[in-house]
Image (cartoon, rainbow, N blue to C red):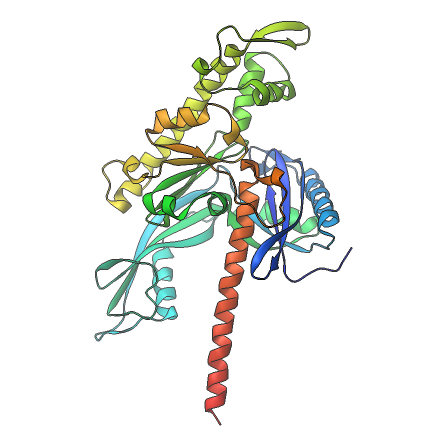
Length: 411
C-alpha cells in the first residue's frame, strides 16, 4: 500500500443504514475516483450515534475496504452531518462604509456576514455553514459578489445552517477513534445538492429531499442560493417498520418485501397480484396489501415536508404569499429512500409541483454501481470539498502574489 497522498480527498457518510467512505484524487484539476467502502452501520439510533464502540468498528471496516481499493493510506476525511437535529434560519445584517463612496473589500464582506450571524441561538447549536443569499449595496439587491464594487452601505441576506453540537462532536470522536482526522463537516443535504441539482433548478427554485433511513433532510434553493435547510423525522426505515408491524414479520423480511414489491401508490399495483411468503409458515400475500401500508406513510412524509416549508421563515424572507410559489423546478428526491416506486407520484400530488429522482454525477473512473441516490451525499461531499479546496488555494495564491509585490516594491 502506498503512502498517504496529499491530493487525496476522502469523505465519510455515516448513515443509519449504511456507512460509506469514498476516496478520490485530483487529476489535472478534476476529481478521479480512487476507491470506496460500504458496510452496514452499527451503533446508530434514529440517525444519531447511540453506541460509540460499534460505530467506530464500522468506520474502521469501511476505511479498510477503501484503503485496499485505493491502494493508499487514508488519514483524514470530510464528514457529513444530517438528521432530525438540523435547523436553518435566515437573517440579515448591514454595515456603513463611511460618508463617501468607496470600494468594497473582503474585510467588508466578512464584517457584514459577522454582523448578520450575530443572532441568538441555543447554546448547544453549532454553525455548519454561513450561506449568503444575496448582498445589497446602497439599496441595490441581487448582488452575489460585491468585492470591488463601490458604495456607502453594504447589507447581506444570510442563511445559517446549524446542527446539534453534541451530535457533531460524537461523529468527530467516532472518526478520530477509528484513526481518521476530521478536516471539515458538511451538511448532507447541501452535499447531495452538489451532486444532483442543475444550475437551472437552483435558479428557478427547487426543494431537495434527501431521504435517509430515519429522517428526510431538506434544502431549498431560490435564485441560485440556499434559502432553507431543515429535516423531518420520517425516512425509509419507517416504511419498513410499518410493514413489519402490519404484516407481523421480522424487520429484515419486511425490508426485503419493501425493496422487491413496495409501492407508494396502491392503484399502481394490479388487484390480483400475489406472492407466497414464509411468515413463519407459507402464506399468500396480496401485493396491494403492501402498498396499502406504505402509501399512508408516504403521504405523511410529504405532509410533514409541506408543513415544514410553510412554518419556516421562507415566506417572510422572500416576501411570498405561498411558499410553494418558489418551487419553479419542483422537488428532487435523492438518498436511498428515493428509490421507492410511486414516491414521485405522491410527491407531485401532495406538493403540486414536478418531481424527479436525483442521481449523482459520475466521477472519472467511478464504477457505474455508484450512480445511485444512496451515494448522492458521499459524491456531493467530494465535490464540495474539491470546490472549497480550489477556493482556498486561489485565496492563498492571491495573498502570496500581494506579498511578493510588497516585497519587490521595498527594494
